[in-house]
Structures are given as structure tokens and as C-alpha cells.
Amino acid sequence: MTTAAATALVLHVPQIPGANLLNLLIVDDERAIREVCRDVAQSLGFNTSVADSAEHAFRLMETQVVDVVLLDLKLPGASGLQALRAFRQKHPEVAVIVVTGYASVQSAVGAMREGAYDYVTKPFSMEELRLMLDRVVGHLKLKTENRMLRERIKSRHGFGSMIGHSPEMERLYRIVSKAALSTHPVLILGESGTGKEMVARAIHFSGSAREKPLIPVDCGSLVPTLIESELFGYVKGAFTGANQAKEGLLALAEGGTVFFDEIGELPLDLQSKLLRAIQEKEIRPVGGTKRQPIHVRIVAATNRDLEQAVAQGTFRRDLYFRLNVLTLRIPPLRERRQDIPLLAAHFLERACRDTGHEQTLSDDALKAMLAYDWPGNVRELENCLERCCALVSGPVIHASDLPTVIHSAPGTSMRGGDHGSGILPIAELERNTILNTITQLNGDKLLAAKMLGIGKTTLYRKLKEYAVQF
Image (cartoon, rainbow, N blue to C red; front, side):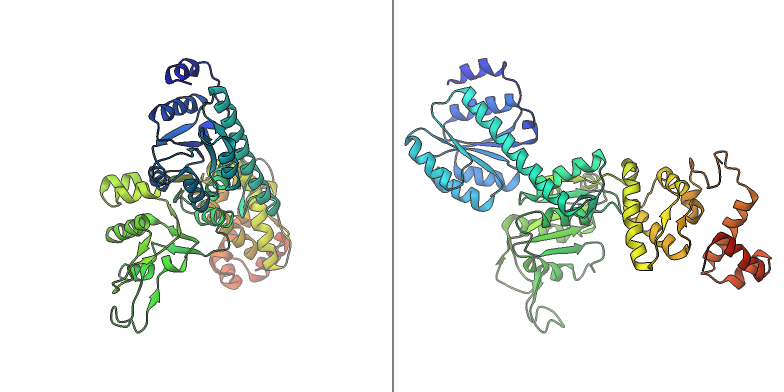
């Protein structure tokens, strides 16, 4: 098939559904073949890149995500078969289609035994290539769906330990499942309290390195003067007090994952050293002269706008690009309100196990929670329900039992009727005042009665009516 012929036919080829989510790398030393395959693949919807040698392909795969490789078995330098073995060892999740035209089917069968997904022989028609790529899209989609299904079986609520069935979370699960299959750096973006560490854990424990360590590093809480020694370790005598050598966190995670939480808080000088460690895959302990090779996956998270930080000079541009190979954005809770009942039920069930008594949410409480914007996201929701379980002794948690900022939010109404106008019955105001006063006084009922100007007998009678104990 000539380049001109392929170009003429490309306009009439329908795109393959799902191909736009996949990245195809074409490895061939013949420029004409590379261009033909690239034009055909792009017309089918693939994101494509090209390499003229195995070495070139390896360099590309270190800096970008690749899902499918179209690999010519006859290459200069390292042979296609050697490249295939290296691909399978370093990137087992990548589907490799081998191209052969000089040793017929025998060499292709050998490649299949080495783990190739399929093969195509030269000369091949555009239709053959299209059918092959169509099959590989279906294959990768099935692998992802099976992976998600296995995680769903483990968790009745969502994916792994993540909870939610909203469209926003379903999209996140698909990306997490795909990220778990690769070894590339991952950058997780999201507001505080959205569950960035939970996503990092889902990526690690759903991947091939699940048996290896996952080491979390809170960049915001580490003492600046100790960050370097914590990350890279130190040798004996490196500084005062270094009576023995200590391994750094990057070395302790060998074969596994290092999770840098709030990576945007890392000082600039440490950013350059971390970048060098990621690029060169080796570290040098503080005070040491020998470099130590490391094989770890980097997952980073931040609630900051790193692009803005780069523009302001507080975050290194080259480190940002190195981390930003795979990016996941966790939606805030206000963008997936339909998950609030499921999350609330989960946290309430867990809190009730700790307190030893069962409680449920009233309709007005749930309505108030759905109307609230939750600036602290899932973490705020969890803390809210733990507080309610600790303070409310009755079997039902009402809207008035929620923190004032929640039940007084615009669009909410208190229990006992439709009070959308914001006007509450005197009995409701009295109940709220008594309960809030006792709560603010940490349960001191005698002091509360004195501050409210009522007798202690009256206060105890009111609490009995409310079925509340402190």
C-alpha cells in the first residue's frame, strides 16, 4: 500500500469507537511505512506517535503513555524481538502488534510466544490494519471492564475503597483502572478532602505492584531541613546525630509506589533533586558518594493550581511536565451530589459500629445535606456524621442535629413542616437553642440551664421530650 493510496482512502474510513482514548506508537525504520500507518491510525481516531528504532521507542515510552505498539520485527540496532521482550518486561500492560514481512509466519509465531497480542504481515492493506486495530481496541476495553468488575465485586459502593455511582465517579473509575495498568507518573488534582490519597491507593493496589510497598509522603508536614534526608536517606556521619545509616523513603518503596501528597508544597531545591531522581532512576543519600538505583512509581497529588505555580516560579516547569504524564481530577462533592446519600449511609454505618447503637438520617437531614455545598468535601461529610453519632442519642438524626452551617444553608428547611420561608415554630427554635447551647458547653447541662435562664428540672424534662441524652 503506497502513501498516496492510503491518503486517498483515509477520508472514507469511519473512526473506531474508543480509539481516541488510546495512544498508538508506530516503530518502523522505513519512513514511508511509518507515515502510512500513522495516517491510517489517526483517521481511525488514535493518538499516534512514531519511532524509527527500538531505542527511540524506549525513550518515548519513558515520557508518554502508550497503549498499543505497532512494532516492525526488522529494526536497526536492537531487533524487534529484543524490543518486544523489553516492552513486555517494562510495560506488560501495553498491547504489541508485530509487523513481519521477511521471515513469514514463523517469526510472527515466535513473537506471539514472547507475548505479542497479534501480528500482521507485509504488505498489508489498510483494511487489514483497520481490523487489527479494531480488535485491539476491543481487547483493551475488555481488560479495563474486567478490572473494574473485579474491583466492584470487592466493593459494593464503587471502586476499591472509593464510594459513588455518579457519572463523574464512573469516569474517574475508568481512568484509575487504566492508570493502574501502567507504570507512568500520575498527577492527582482535587480540592482538600476529596480523597486524593484514596485514589492513589486504588491505583497502587489495583496494579501489578500491589504486593510492593506504598509509601505516602506528606510534603506539607515535613520539616524543610529534614526533607532531603527523609526522601533520600543518609550515611553514617553525614551530619550531627547521624550515628547510623538510614534508608530514605524512595529506597524503602523499591518496586512499589511513592505517593507525594501536596507536591506543590515541596521546596524548590528539593524539586530539582526529586526531578533528577525520577529522570535518572537513582538517588544519592545525604553525605554519600555512591548513587543507588531505584525502581519506584511516582504518584503525586495537590490541591494547588500547578500551572499557576509554574508561572509564578514556585514550582519547576520540568518537574511539572515529568509528573503530568497521567492526570486525574477528582470532582468535589458539590459536583456529585447524588453520591451524598450513599456516602452518608456508609459513614453513618461505620460510626454506629463504634458507638454501638443504630441511627438513621431523617428526610429533612438528608435534604439539608444535599443542599449544602460541602467546601471540605468528603472529609467534612465524614466528620459531620461522626459528630452527630457522638452527640445525638436518639435513633434518628434530624436536620437540627447537623452543624448550624449545614441546616441553615440556603435552600434547606427544618423538620416538622415546610418552612421554606425561613420562619420556624417557637418549639423548634427552643429545641435548637437548648441543644446548641449544651453542645457548645461540652455537655454541661447545669451551666446550660443557668445560661438559658431555666431550671435544671425544666432542662431535663425538655431533653426527655427530645429523646436526647448528653
